[in-house]
Length: 203
Image (cartoon, rainbow, N blue to C red; front, side, top):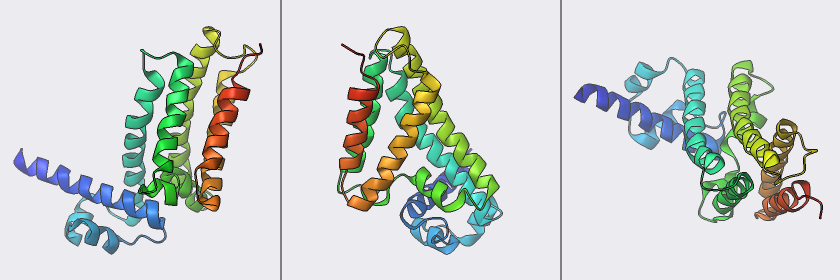
């Protein structure tokens, strides 16, 4: 049992280090030795868990997806809040992360979105995994929007799935713009437009 726990811990250390480095440096800029140096794990241990850098990077994506889910799932499924309050909490949570000057996200953007830009066009395995991660988040948002429409919180004309896809794409675009301007104003603008214009019911 003790050996299994140690192995699991070593694997998690590798994944956490890889996630951090790929967020800051990208897939192409992150070497296996960079990961080993960052977490103090010998090369033999790396190849015990992963056959190649690509296999490792796919596991890092799963690790990132679990972390994303741990943040997004409670926000978008909170039974105490109304669906529209959940969507507001989603925007405010991530806006807070990206607005924090000490956060990697503020400087480096979305770790999933970055890898989409870097790898989706050239590697089908990465594209499929990245698309699945983004689709999962979109599905949670679509469910919240469907509940909001049923409760009369948003215009009945809005299709929840299509609206979720639009919001998610707009949010990723705002993150990209944030990296260009160096502050969170594009995210604030996106949030305010979605909540106050797109989802607002006519008076």
